[in-house]
Image 1: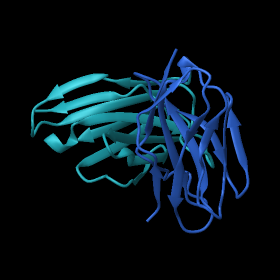
Image 2: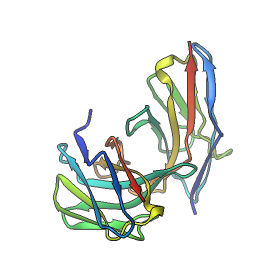
Image 3: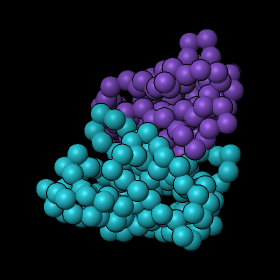
Length: 113
Length: 112
């Protein structure tokens, strides 16, 4: 079945550092790929998405590129802030199957001043 | 913030008792979902609804039932709670052809 693998956390960075959170997936066909963010005490929010190979999703300074050849969708941000501290989830949905999203286990990011 | 309200926010219940969690939305979205979040598992889909009285099972539906009698309300029922159902439960909503984008704040359920 479909699956998503994320790097283990927690990831601790100093403010203004460069962020990469790795995500790889296993799926048949061409899934849609997503990143969600969960701030402390809140539900998840959809951060960005990409629906086909080589698409780049971006939002709030974060971006991720759909790499079919490496089955990856790594999340990056050039300069993190303390307010970016959260848990980040990589996820996928099969073609035509947005209702059955598969989530990774999440990567906790802590940004220190 | 999207208008999604979950109730209760916290609940402790005994093994074998029935429990109902409620999700209420004010966005008039067609799709509603129930997920559970557990350490090491991310979020897993329990059930979802694609309209009033229209529901389907997710990945971990055993031991759970759902009902949707109105567009705005989606109920999750544990008929006989077990300790393995101790978890944080999230409701989410979406429009057709989009993934769940808006989540409630979650209900922390403890079964003792």
